[in-house]
Image 1 (cartoon, rainbow, N blue to C red):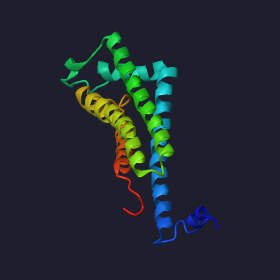
Image 2: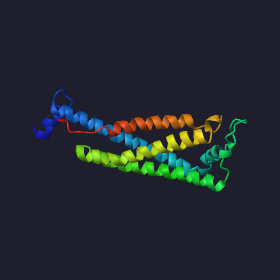
Image 3: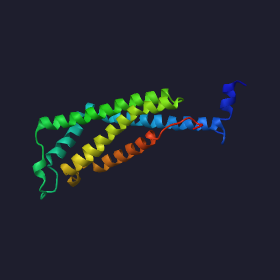
Image 4: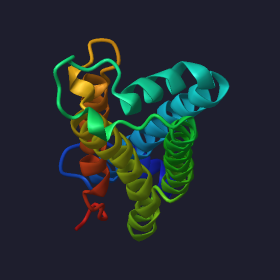
Length: 188
């Protein structure tokens, strides 16, 4: 049997170097796949926002205009009613989604390509951190902090995206934490 044949015949056996190598490959494959999954998801979000521009533009307009909040709220002075600013805000959201998606796609490709080299794999994760952090900034800062708190989105029964934004943020944060755990060689 060749050395490669011997190496892979024990893959997964507890206490063996080959078992450690197999576990390392599984973990790195999982990290790469999670980044690719986020890339796909955010790509679909951006694609939907571009190809069905008006649907989610309506969401942005209502949140920024603050026209569906509690009738007696005193924070309506924060409202933005300019159509130009509505479009600008929406285009910035789409641009951030595109940046996140592209960063995650490139990172996933690089991570898959360097899966057997711990140092190269750790370097490849840098762009994943950029993409995943961009996702967090979109949904945590953009939707929860600015939309939810500054524009009072939480008061709207129809145009309230806080629960979805929280779900997205929690999901991405979990993946980000998983991805940034340093990867080492099986003997380290």
